[in-house]
Amino acid sequence: MSTSSAPSSRLRSALPQPIPGFEPIESVVLARLGRWDLDLFIPGPKGGQPVLLRGAGVQVEGQRIETLVASLDGPVLVRSDDFQRLSSELLERLDELAGDESIPESDRFVMLQTAAAGEVEVAAGLINPTRFVGVSRQMGRAFNQLMQSGDLAPAEVYAIARHDHYTFSHITNVCCYALTLATALGIHDSADLEELAIGALLHDSGKRHIPVGVLRKKGRLTDQEWATIRQHPQRGFEDLANSGTLTLRQLLMIYQHHERIDGGGYPVGLVGAELHPWSRLLAVVDVFDALTGRRPYRRPCTTETALKHLQANAGKQFDAEMVDCWSTLMGGA
Image (cartoon, rainbow, N blue to C red; front, side, top):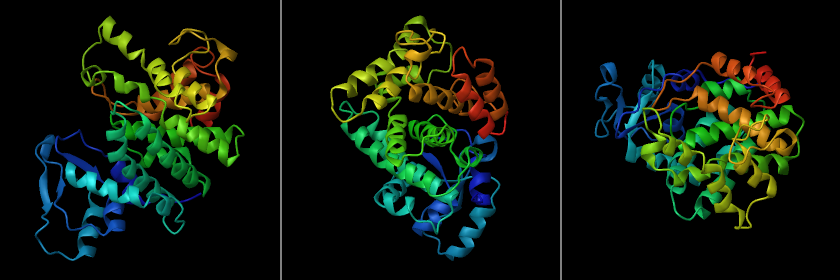
């Protein structure tokens, strides 16, 4: 099993509350791109305005900055437009990074997730989903290559993943969790795993039809708002069903990931065996990541709390075998 780099694990677990105009960035991204020429910040006291750590116009030896950033007890921040540029630079080198076994797997995951950031956030909101499908294919291939190149365990992915409200964070986390669970359940064909990875990345594509104010509402949803949210599997399916670019298994992942084993899910209340196995698999890791991620209306749950929720609802909301397998993978069985 690969060893996660200490800075990656530590910094990811210490993501601050969102600060408008700034994004957290890993030192490994700055180091691999050689981008120590940016304004670098640390979070201000009590979540206040970020404090300048190193200005772009200040000439400081790169190694000294790299050592300083890696030693911080928390993330370094960059301006949002700088983060977007770094994301684009990584996206251009996606295939190279995914297959570079000289780079620790944990660092490659961080870079791939950062590469997804800018493009996914833009593509996910477009009226025409073609661009979102394209970037999902690109990212699905890269994440599958990464997960098959070694032995990056779910707990390691959890330790280095971003746990915030951004679309790219959720879908890339879910993609890697789905690949790991699928492999543990006996799916080993690379083409099948890549197909599953792309379906996982696209599972929430219908959320682009939900107003941002509803998705990020801190208070209780009204009945009408909840009804709008419940439409996203249907809307995502409708967007992509006639495109001819996705397989039936991928479309069912999009359509069925909020259905329940006991028939109490949505959009149509399917029961048990009516649900495709990939949809049942996706439901487990989707809810796990949703619970352990930060949302505008609540703090993230611990892994223990999330696993207890899955186990309490095994055989009702979730496939019991898949919950048991995921709990074992996460060390919670």
